[in-house]
Image (cartoon, rainbow, N blue to C red; front, side):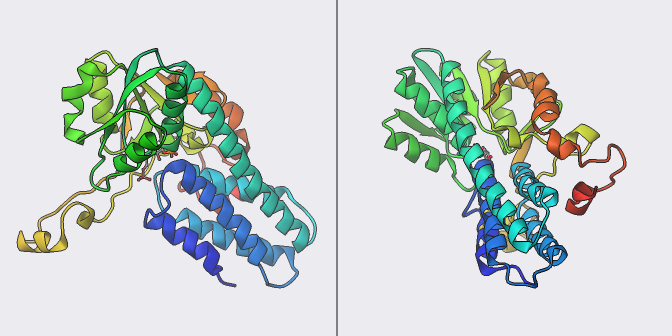
Amino acid sequence: MKIPDEVKIIGEDIRSMKIRGAGKIARAAAKALGLAAQKYSGPNNPEVFKKYMTMNAEYLLSTRPTAVSLPNAVFYVMNALEKASGNVDELRSAVIEASQRFINESLEALKKISEYGANRIKDNSIVLTHCHSTASVSVIIRAYEQGKIRKVYSTETRPLYQGRITTRQLLEHNVPVEQIPDSAVRYIMHEVDQVVIGADTIASNGAVVNKIGTSQIALAAHEARVRVFVAAESYKFSPMTLIGELVPIEFRDPTEIVPREWIEKHHNVEVLNPVFDVTPPEYIDAIITEHGVIPPQAAIFILLEKMGWVLEKIKLGRLEKIRLEDLLEE
Ligand code: RUB
């Protein structure tokens, strides 16, 4: 049994960040599991098929550590497999159907978030956003269509410049946008009316894990009494944080920051490249989800009410390390 090439291509695109952003990663992982099911050519034995799907799931889970949207998407599809019964064809259909359902629900969620989020933007606003978040961009575009946005500041987001994707997408929708270096955020904040950002993971206490630099932006906004909104689908809430798990922060290769030759020339100096940070709930005014706009402190309700299907699988307090098998075990 091996992982099909189609799944490996998606997995490697996630790892290398060709596919990036928590929502896109989740949809790509769901799609990959659907493809894995389609490509299965092993024996007509449900147990073998389940093992094969678990192998594909484990592989996808290993690609990037921080965005909980990835495990949540994988668990969503694997949960459908676990609940299904019958022969391999029936199990295969259950996986393909769940994969498509996750993708559709995710896109529906984005539409709702753009509406709910745009409602929270005041007339004549200057908005600041960070990195590239599909959820935030859709809020901003919708608010612009409603005539509420005067200008957007888009941070360049070193080292990989995802802010340029944001700027390009906003320009494509005629939204007036100015690109600024990350270090200009505090300087510009007195002009800003609202900050709108996305999330990779939201903890049960409402802390938001997002692209490195987000917490500094939130601090500068707090100091200037500018409100901070987070646009995030419910599958970005982390069930594991309910039982005290920490959100792993991804560190990427130092050469994303400086060339290898520079490092070698400088006595192999240590270069750190943490790619996400944690913004405490006190610095966030509201989280815009497809279920409505909530204060960060209400994250726990989204987890308990909307992500309950994952919680059912967690044996509270007994897991040292949460692994797929543990979550799927009855
Ligand atoms: C992307 C990032 C985005 C969130 C939300 O980081 O931090 O703000 O993932 O994005 P990276 P979306 O570029 O390292 O993946 O709203 O598109 O899910």
